[in-house]
Amino acid sequence: MPILEGKELRIVGFLCNWCSYGGADTAGVGRFKQPTDLRVIKVPCSGRIDPLFIVKTLMSGADGVLVSGCHPRDCHYTEGNFYARRRLEMLKRFLPIMGIDAKRFEYTWVSASEGQRWQEVVTKFTEQIHELGPAPKIAGADAEETLKLMEAAL
Amino acid sequence: MQNLKDLKEQIRKALPELDVVIGWTGGYDPLHATPHFIRRDEDIDKLQVNALCVHNLATYLPALRGKKVGIVVKGCDSRSVVELLQENLIDRAGVTIFGFGCNGVVDQTKIRRIVGDVGNIDSCEISGSDVTVSASGAEHKLPLGDVLADKCATCRYPNAVLSDHFAGEEVTTTATFEDGYKDVVEFEEKPVEEKFGFWLKEMDRCIRCYACRNACPLCVCRDHCVAQSRDPHWLSQEAHVRDKWMFQVIHAYHLAGRCTECGECQRACPVDIPILLFKKKMNKEIKEVFDYEAGIDPEATPPLMTFKTEEDKIRERKW
Ligand code: SF4
Ligand code: SF4
Image 1 (cartoon, rainbow over the protein chains, first blue to last red):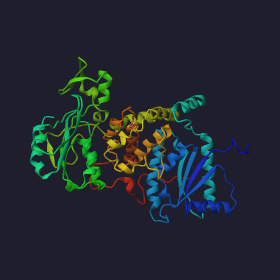
Image 2 (cartoon, protein in one colour):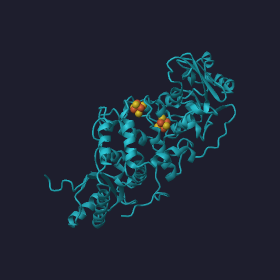
Image 3 (cartoon, rainbow over the protein chains, first blue to last red):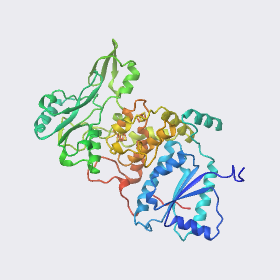
């Protein structure tokens, strides 16, 4: 049995190639201690992130999703993150009506030089997800199985 | 409608310049109206405009681009036309809008729930405040208010917001924005697990017929819909509750800042899934953050298709 079984939750991070991925790399090079729950998906720009990626990730079993891009005004493509900001803000506000806690999703900006900041973001977000615990998972093709599981958990 | 005569006259005058005028006429039974494509003078006489004319005819417009099309619109439908203009999906010069003031349309589901068997309708009379339905030999007198679509009870735009010809008097309304979103606020207050469970159960009934998508005037991708695309492969073809739910979220998202709440998606759903709630939620947030409503100003840009360097209402999160 893997030693981390039961201790880790599944968190997916969408990071932009230019700033935040670089920031995470800086944190790694600086050997800053980080929680291990996050799985990173590198995208060319935060503007490339369709909010539906995040919905799909959450509906497919992730317990939390973190999006990080370049600070506003620092986008490699000038305005990608300005569009992203609007879309992601809407997502954050939309999730609760689906029955998904809005705290399971956060978006933020981290630049390539901010290794320290990256460490803080990942640590705090991971703590936040651990506080919430595992997200309800859609178990079978029909609603029934999931509903049974949910009832048992409550 | 009181001024059906005026409307017909307006259409008669405009018809020689147009390829087609889209309105409504009697459907397969007295309880239903159906879209009606007017090409000749004699078609005009069959035009019907009353509380049974539920369809939002704007849904036909993008496919008819390039033709000279006339369209009869209620207030809500006119907003769809405006939104299509905003997004350059139709041309202003190509559409002639026949607007009127609407007093509300019926929700067939509500009628079905009260009348029961609607398989055999003998007649349906609509007076000022009542609908009288005779079905399977029994007569039912229903107060119109009880069977109006929910959207009509809180409608703020009963009159066509944009029209070339307007028939009859304008309808007045006192409804506010907040009135229209009470159901959203109420639902939001439920515990998070309850909401999750609610949608699971509702979405389980979905038969993936895509009637919701096809009825939507702003679902314009048609043959290129992600629901059927294998590249990208957003959804499998399985009848999995996750895919069905995901599809509705896709619909709500692709309509973010564009949906005018005509309610056609929910009306068209054969299994009565309350999918309008997703779209209303999005609109409520769009209004709060961008102070924007879709389909009012033909010159405006939907908020998710643009940005501001300094957003007024989006706060940077502190970490
Ligand atoms: S999503 Fe529904 S309510 Fe919104 S425009 Fe489309 S059909 Fe109308
Ligand atoms: S109309 Fe209803 S049943 Fe058909 S695909 Fe849409 S939600 Fe599903």
